[in-house]
Amino acid sequence: MNDARVGPIKVMVVDDQDLVRDGIAMILDGQPDIEVVAQAVDGADAIRQAAAILDLAVVLMDVRMPVMDGIEATRQLAGGPRVLILTTFDLDEYVYDALRAGASGFLLKRSSRDELINAVRVIAGGDALLAPPVTRRLIDRFADTRLDPTVAAGLDVLTAREREVLVLVAKGNSNAEIADELHLTEHTVKTHVSRMLSKLGLRDRVQAVILAYDAGLVTAGR
Image 1 (spheres, rainbow, N blue to C red):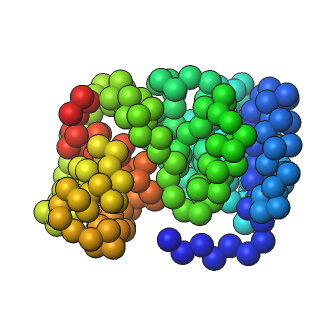
Image 2: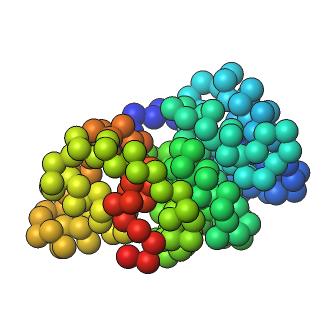
Image 3: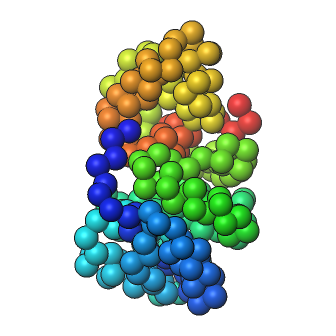
């Protein structure tokens, strides 16, 4: 991971509830390495403000909002700041849709202060935020209803080993666990993951998980 950021992590908080939005902003602004540079009341407001903010790193995005929901806003922000989805429920169809739209992870609104701060740092650093038990249940619940067989054709660019790594990533395994499973070093696994993401045009591990399920490479409960 190569993080060339200079200065604090610039964050936008998007939520239609004033108390939630202000509370999150207050917690994050209290950190020396994080700066809340904007707050938005819905997805459309977020898109407008994001276009004017230089080096915006992370957008904390609520899902259900008026005017424009968090899913469409996440889709429109693709390629820009990383999106961390905020949700009340850990098994929510809309969260799965947001991950498919390009979000780098999700965080429950009932998460602790430290979990919130860590999530922002993880996402800003270029990693995906996968809470394995919750993420796995979420994807297992909704993925099999969204299979897209045409996605499988795009996997031909992978080597056999990279395909193995993709499957294990989709099952929620860490690099260390993949290394143990395939009898490789963690450095080698990291290289395979990086090449796999690059070949498939994916931003992070969350997108790899979604693609693997969309392609039927991994199925719910397996």
